[in-house]
Length: 82
Image 1 (cartoon, helix red, strand yellow):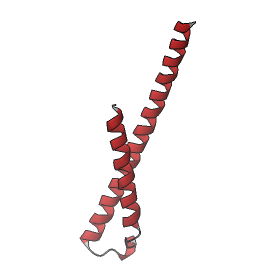
Image 2 (cartoon, one colour; image 1 turned 90 degrees about the horizontal axis):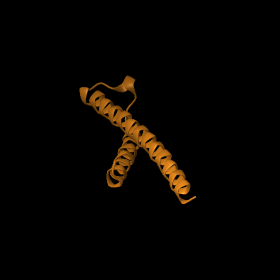
Image 3 (cartoon, one colour; image 1 turned 60 degrees about the vertical axis):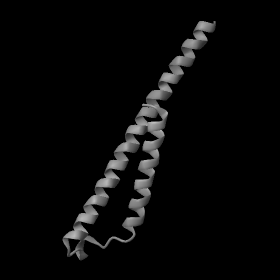
Image 4 (cartoon, rainbow, N blue to C red; image 1 turned 45 degrees about the horizontal axis):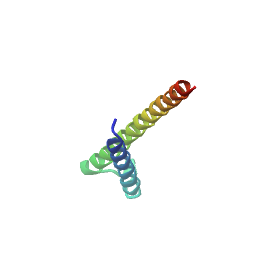
């Protein structure tokens, strides 16, 4: 994954979570929902949050893989220099 794509994905996920946080402050409670639009808005918000969490998890796992690869590279380079 190129660095630019990873950075863009992180910024997108953070922006979605910030919008979700702001939107959650204005949501009515499930018992007060009477209109289809209220239910649809809540479902879209929940979907965005779940998708963002999945993106964060994927990015975290990728960063762990890249860190392990970097450590292997450094060990190999040190072994070649010895």
